[in-house]
Image (cartoon, rainbow, N blue to C red):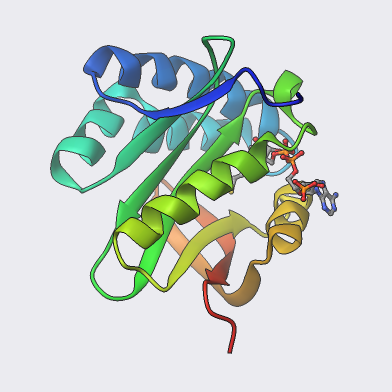
Length: 172
Ligand SMILES: CC(C)(COP(=O)(O)OP(=O)(O)OC[C@H]1O[C@@H](n2cnc3c(N)ncnc32)[C@H](O)[C@@H]1OP(=O)(O)O)[C@@H](O)C(=O)NCCC(=O)NCCS
């Protein structure tokens, strides 16, 4: 079976978070080249995906990180954040390049949806760079709709230029 060896589990320790931070640095420097500048990638990795930043997110900001393991080897991760109200925030979704195109993102999303339902949420939303065409296509295929677009000032002269996409559990 295609996914026999894929396991998705919550990051439970600082050591696991630190492993995700190492992977994140590699993935971000490969997948965002051509979409944002290297300076902005460095800045965003430090601000959002360094071990210290992720430790703060999990300890003080309600984030939950999940690890994606293939035969026990970390090859991807995602982070979610339950918020007030009926929406559930999918904050990050990343797979190492050599594990893309195999449908693993669909498995990750299944886990996101299960988790959102456990929190009694009615929808899952995310932000995605407007020029990240592949991710936008994948989200559309899964059933996300573009509901808004936002430009967020993240300091140092950088902005995030994103679509907001949302998946509704009950379609009206
Ligand atoms: C975004 C990302 C997680 C998606 O993972 P992936 O391995 O490329 O996607 P998958 O192969 O799992 O495809 C998921 C679904 O989208 C479909 N899909 C993939 N490419 C598609 C395309 N170009 N058009 C339409 N559907 C597509 C697949 O068929 C699959 O659906 P299925 O399970 O029903 O067959 C991965 O590409 C990634 O890590 N990219 C770099 C980081 C990134 O950009 N993250 C998102 C930041 S917001």
